[in-house]
Image (cartoon, rainbow, N blue to C red; front, side, top):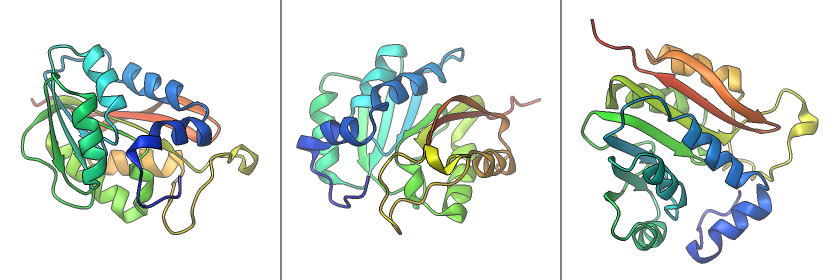
Length: 199
């Protein structure tokens, strides 16, 4: 997980090598988005677009807006999503999110690069970006309860995972409801939380 300058050519192979459960993590993220009406999706850290493809397969009526800090990754994602209803924009997780009210905000393997206050701040901005009744689904590296479960290689100072309990707390503090773990294995987890309906 430690390279700062990603090579899109080898990114997906690297993920599968360093995170053997990468395809399962993506599938569990998509599963966490089921059960709500989805016409608009915001993806934080689009990478090569592979997760976006899975999301659009699951929600064929949706339009996806994806952001990534790497122009090389955005180029790879544009190729992967050619002909799909997607808009890909340069953007960092520390910056204001794209304008709009989204039915779904998702992120896979990007948020763990933020420190604790950075995650808490992002979750608050995600809550504002969601429509009432919308959902945030997060698939990422976490600090496991048992240190023996820490299998994913991390680079100190760059990979900054937090515990599940911390992140559930920040989701609740952001005003999101029913913050929960939908899947967990070792030092990987999928979390979800919903913006309460109005009224």
